[in-house]
Image (cartoon, rainbow, N blue to C red; front, side, top):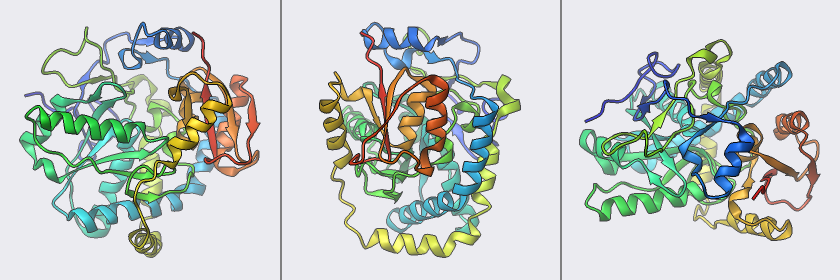
Length: 369
């Protein structure tokens, strides 16, 4: 059976923070120009997970803004981390294994693990696995987890929900895996923010800025997004990813973790209040986010919901690694998307104010077919 990858040989996180259930593809040339890659994806010639976008490296002004955003949002991030981790512990107990969905979930999983360690004295196992829209979760990784841990005690973690596509993908994939004879996993997804109202385990449902969404690999352990390509990933292989060791001089992955976890002690009371409020609320997913996405799709004549990326995190990712058409914002000067306005300006993407938008902002991908 394959063994996990750990830093510093793979990624910039310490080995105790996370084990990556991935195949190292660092030696393979997988990057393509964004416009070329987008055309192949939209034409159906290739799946988005078969290649990687060239990692966009923002200018100094944007990196300076990241530092400001991190400092200002760290207490709010810490509170949400504490809320969702304590919610998991309250409902699932302490004999659990955290499994982050790479890569957006990984820094959140590490922060949740740190919270459990710092405030509860718990040392929880933590892994990162690949899930691919339209392809499902890495079944080889699930085999590994089931072999080494109680599958029903695995808690899947992600950063945030957009319209809920990954939450649905996870539920479908785990059901299919079990029906095919695999172990049974709980598909309840724990996220820091659930603005799409599509999970029941969350730190907040506010569409707020999560600093780890502002950058690519340089805030995610220098690891690429995951790759599923039949020419590189054979039977028995984990899904793949690359370690961008050459970006070490601009890596802020561990800085984000340290700045947020330094706030844990000061927000313990606030997190307890938030937890009580969440437990006292109706957490039933309404999928309201999906409905609002379909509304935007219809109003702007967009061919598929896949081109509508709602929320601060998803809009940021459109600007960092896709071919953006325009950005919709509820308020032009809202502080939670100052970085988005800066990215949009740098890439020449128009920003349009839509006062009744269900999310703080929405990114629209350009249809080039």
